[in-house]
Length: 157
Image (cartoon, rainbow, N blue to C red; front, top):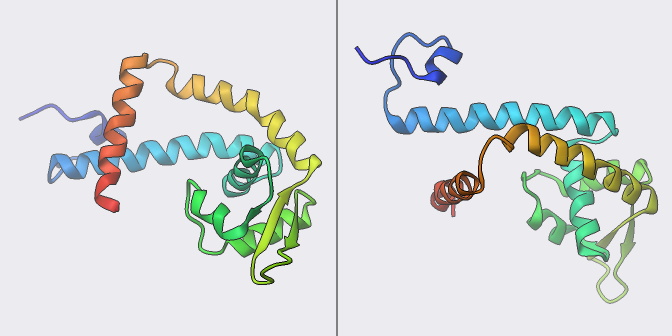
């Protein structure tokens, strides 16, 4: 009988996985959950959710107001309603909305100075988390991980 895999031990699973595909998928899900929990704590310390930070990161990187739908297309984690997310950020004075003068259906979202300070202050803690979570991997391993994750996502498009 083969030795139990690390994930089998973590999940206290007695029977082997049905397939390597099942074990790989569950490993991805387990890793994602644990990393999201670790990163999410840091966002909460700054009064943000991961999705809110994602919007602010996009706006900071763009350097200009963006239409809400453009922001939605750039999100790492897809949210069902960008409007509600922008509503919550607006209530916190982290973004302002501006309606397009040429097309009233288009709403631009602009990051505020308050939000820029928060996002800038998150850079160092997030760099520290990246080091804690992935610093034990060398450049070659990180490139291979990226390649494999990108390959795994190919079937989603």
